[in-house]
Length: 135
Length: 154
Image (cartoon, rainbow over all chains, first blue to last red; front, side, top):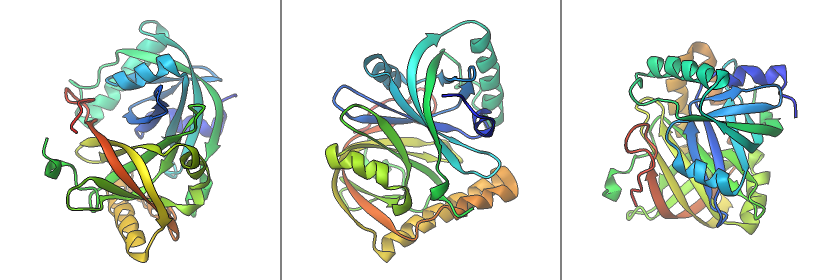
């Protein structure tokens, strides 16, 4: 599914996002992520800094869901995703690494936020959860 | 780690999310509010799920009662993850809705500090009616950014 213009502000790293994956026993795993980055018009990349369990789950089950926020009104979107590949070098990795440095600098986490790899996921579907708010 | 050291989510400035999934391993997120321990032994969590966004998580919970809740302190980044099994789903009482609104309003103040006027939009998240999930905690993890991230606490 193509990423639309209205979704793009949510992918600028202004507000931390969350990801949920599932293990082999159908137990979900949620965690906070610093970046959901537009890789191209059908894929996003998420930053792997710590999350070994998310990585393990994605090896066994490629499905994931992320929640991202629109910084203009704080409404949120959910994106259904499917894992495609991992990158640990190249232009996309370098671009994400630079953005993560900026995020880390703003939050005083320079020594903690270091990009290990970028997970590239195909966007299957997305939903603006407008029913959650009275905007 | 002593259970008493777990973050108090009831009145803090927290971001709270719940993950559920079906048996085909399709996950989804729900924004929840008012996550709090419901007993003195801290063996159970109560979570308020706004009814307006409950359709998909309820469909998941009808066939798979496993959940994961991540609760993050918006200022200090201290984050915990609770895994557990939903034991009851009931209509929220007025007292539980008040807890949910308190958690929303406290986090609204924090977002105003970070984002200015638009932060007030956080208070527009509706929770006039909600469902209260009682969750038996099975595992607790530290998810605070840093060396402790991923460490099992319970």
